[in-house]
Structure formats: structure tokens, C-alpha cells
Length: 159
Length: 159
DNA sequence: GTCAAGTTTAGAATTATTTTAATCTGATGT
DNA sequence: ACATCAGATTAAAATAATTCTAAACTTGAC
Image (cartoon, rainbow over all chains, first blue to last red; front, side, top):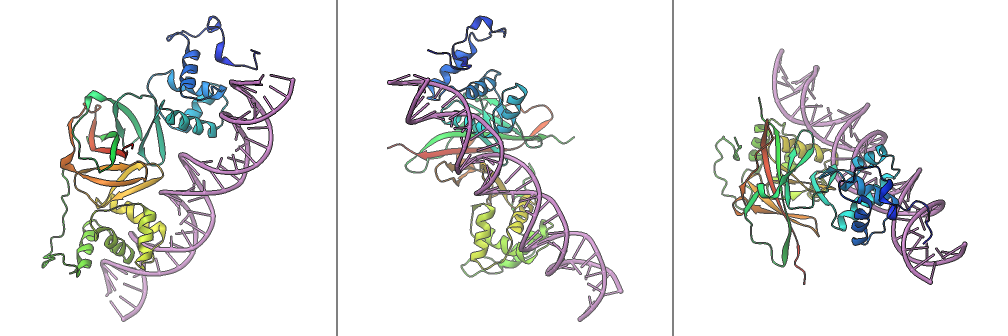
């Protein structure tokens, strides 16, 4: 029960000046990590907060690392990579590949698809109910569909 | 729109009934390259032959390079990369990204989609008519759809 | 507090791909 | 045929994203 260094786990919510849009941000994230069997370390907590506190996001490891720096969270890039992969394996993030060269992680785990902007390399969500895959082919023997990804590539309509 | 629906050539191709014995493989490929505005060099001809002579294929630069070696065609890896990109720009190949880490090129230019085998990282074609995307979302303003990619990820059904 | 197992980290290593700079080749003109 | 030169090829170096390594540090249990 010793308070070893700064464990954010059970700090009093009262001294948190941030507007608590969702009750207690830390305990929620803590539960998420615990539920995923991941030890809630300082850096994992901080990254999880950055990832899941701001709505749906598509980001690369470099982007999250930059985010962390801006937020004065000191984590190495290697940890960002590790953490993203752990979160992905734990089902907290979705990995999207649209562009060899950058791997995106998507915090939106609901059923949905993506627009990909060829020019900028950016991604945006398409709600699941706006795309309908009406027919699917017979799956090879002994195989099961793990996911169907639809990417709508767009580019500026020519003037 | 304006899909360049496979222009085999416009010169009189006597008759290429495609028997095992290659009729005039070179002139066909030569025309393809000329039609694409690419100078028919020895290595481009050889690579095109490897690419387009054997039905639909999904391959990476490394794979094609290995293929070339086996066929006793001496090309550098850099040339393989250059050539694949040129063919892609010229509309002779399709680039598929399903796995950051390897970029595949697909010799099948017809409208179709893909199975992706999560375990092996392999790809296979799904004929266009076996997948139907029934609904598409409104495209962002000023943008036009350049392509819709559907990737059906499969893995072994659990025992 | 002690300890072991799990984490983090800086920096080295790896992999796929691109660039560089030199050299070669194919198309064109004569 | 021969010279010419833009475009093509190449080996080698450079780059970018990501992973690995080994040491140092945390966490959770006792």
C-alpha cells in the first residue's frame, strides 16, 4: 500500500482541474488496460489517454510520439511502437494499411470503412452503415473471414 | 471511368491462339511498351515477359527480381523497382497495399478484389462480379472516387 | 524493503525502397 | 553505318519506418 512514486492509479479526482467529460478518465483507462492484461505503466496510461480521450483518430507511431512530446509526456519512439502493437493485439486499436510506408492505427473500433486521400495520404472514417457490401464470394476451404476492409480512394475531381 | 480496357495491340496480330509454343511473344510485349510510351529496353522486355506471360500474378519487387535471376535475366533490383513503378503509372499493373512491409503488384487489371491470407501474407483474386458494393457514401466535396478496394481478410477457421 | 518479472530506453540493426552518379543503350539524324 | 544524346541501367550509398538488443528501471507480490 505504499505510494511508490507517482502512480496515477488512484489519485483523488477532486484535484483534477480538467473538465471531467467522462467521469474519471484515469480509472476508466486503468480498467481498459487491466482488462486487456496490460500492466498500467506510466507511459501506457499516458499514451492511452492521448489515444482515447479525443474521439476517433487515425495516427501513426510518429504522430503519437509527437503528440506525447507536445503533452510533455516523455516516451521513447520504441515504446510508442510497442504500445501501439500491444493495444492492437489487445483489441483496443485497429491497424489500417493503405499506404506502404506508414501504418495507421485507428481508435475507432466500431464497424466502419475508410476514405483514403491519395494526395495527402490522409484517412477518414466512413460509418459502417454507409457502405454496404452486398455480396461476398465463397471463402476458401477451411478459412473464415476475419474482416472485410473497404477503402474508397478519392482524389480531387479535376476542375 | 475511361478504363483502358486492355488494348492488346492494333497491329495485325496474325493469330495468337496461345499454344504452348510462344507465337510472337515479343512483338506483343513490344507493342504494350510502345503503347505506354516506354522505351522497349532489354530489361523492360524481359520483365514484361515474366510479368505478363504467366496469367494473373501478385508479386513484390523482390519476387520479380528472383524470377528474373532464375530466368537468367540479369537486372538490378533498382531496375525492377523502377520498372514496376513505370508499368504501374502506365496502367499495366495495379499496386496493392495490404501489408505494410511488402508492396504487391497485380498483373490483373480487370475490376476485381482480393482475399488476403493473414497468416501467410498471400493474396488471391476475387473476380469483380463476386463482390458487390451496394452503397457508397457521399464523397467529400471536390473529390472523386478513384477506386474502391475491397480486401477480404481470411484466416484458418478455428478447429 | 526485497525480488523477480515485466517495461522502458537509447542506440544499433534490419528491411524495403529510393537516390546518386557513373556508365550504357536505343532512337534519330546524316 | 556513325555520331549523338536523352533516357535507361547499375552498384553503391542513402533514407525511412520499424524492430531488436541489452542495460536500467518499475511494478506488484511477499
